[in-house]
Length: 146
Image (tube, rainbow, N blue to C red; front, side, top):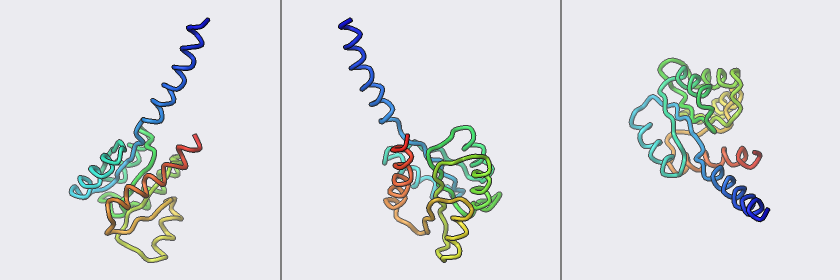
């Protein structure tokens, strides 16, 4: 009986510690190799697991297969507009945060991104620290709710 009680007190905290240390997964959708490289380094150093793809179709497939905790979506992709990919992700049932990265900063553009299903719009150029902060901020409410 004493062993059972001991195991219960040790096992529960260890399971909690294991799940709290698991890295959140970021799906990075960007077709510019240099940007992918630096963004991946910044996000990995911040403790995120990063999956990368260079197309909207790849984003939709990866989101269904891997269910990332957040998507960072470039607006200008070779096969489709990042907003079309965002709409498709939402139509496919993807509910986690989507951050759209774009070179446009107008209010109409931001509104269009939000209407397409984006949660955050990050305007290029941006600091890598800003990207990391936005990804972290997008994931925290999801982690707290679970």
